[in-house]
Image 1: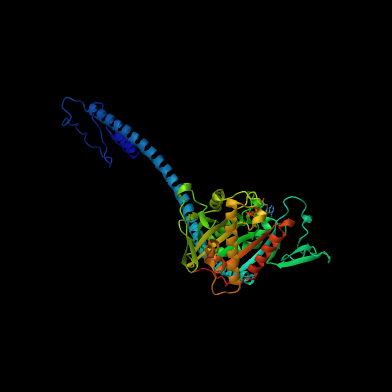
Image 2 (image 1 turned 30 degrees about the horizontal axis):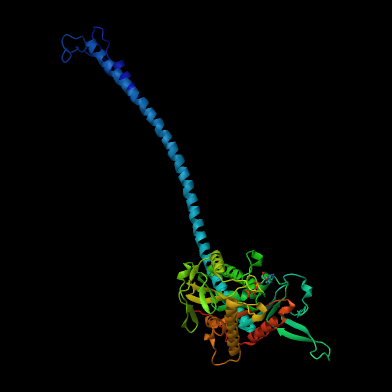
Length: 494
Ligand SMILES: Nc1ncnc2c1ncn2[C@@H]1O[C@H](COP(=O)(O)OP(=O)(O)OP(=O)(O)O)[C@@H](O)[C@H]1O
């Protein structure tokens, strides 16, 4: 624009080119001599008007050129204005974001402080929880000790056919769940006196009548099972005549409500181990399942060729540790894995038909779960074994009509059960020598019987009247066990 103004000024001042003399006026208005248009530099032949026209045309070109530049400068200007507006918007947004960031940083700081406080609270609560857990274990185990380290529960099987009220010879007092009476009319041998009623009273830690369900039975021993996670050896075994309900009590059947002690104990152990993880406890579990059949050990978790079955021996590896050579010790991580092993064991278990029980178990089966716990927060370790035993049924030769192999089996069963009785009697008498080695069963279970263990025995009895004398024998045996006082169990902790 400035240039245009200058140009206009310049052209307005140009002298008129009409062949006349050009006049210029001085500032003081004085008339000056007309300047002779010099021919020098423009060629003597050109007229002076041509030069000016050329200059004007140049100027016009330049003007056009500058106008173009002005236009693009204007466009540039617009673009710059636009960019400035955008930049200002960004600046505003940035300012908003910066202030938001500032607020976030404040929040973060507050949150960090809060997290710090919460961590402190959690640590405090963890400590309290740990102390609570320790207190629970102490109390729980003190209660268990008061109840005695060998306890005996009696369970009466329901009649498999017929009316339960027909069981007249077994009397269970309504308000005492620890007592049981066997009553029988005894005929006078001479016929001179009247028949007399003979009663045999027994008292145990708990008596379950024929209507007791599996859940109810397990509830009574679940605290004992819990001790296994606290580092105590726990052993539970079922004793009784053939067909009296030992396998039903220990294993039960597939339906969950009919599960026996073993599946329920396994379920509880894994559930509690999971809950204890929150307190820093990590557990590892190893399962084994062995049967004692005719005084020979058989691995119930064996999966190899039948003719390649290895032989097994019981070895004492330390004062409170027993191991079986060549036995499958299977690491297990959850309940399902144990259930699969139990199924495998059941397939392997020797069952055969006897005159008294179609699926009678002819061997003692010993399920063991070795538990190792570690609490790295507390630098504590514990080690224990949960041992669940289903004993073979005690039976009398004549009554069970056993012959041949069945007779041999039965003799071995009775011999080991007799030895169990002898060991228990020696423990009850506090004898200096206890003959554990007399049978494989007592040798394998020695830590559960006289050692550092909490032991529970089920005595199962059949309700049929013809089982009276077998029931009497079993209850007498169980009473002996009940009187047995073994050393106080202590947790295997480091
Ligand atoms: N409490 C119960 N309720 C219902 N049925 C039961 C109960 N106890 C046992 N039975 C049934 O009685 C039968 C014999 O029981 P079980 O096989 O458990 O006896 P056992 O003592 O293990 O015999 P064995 O020593 O010969 O192995 C089975 O059919 C079982 O299902």
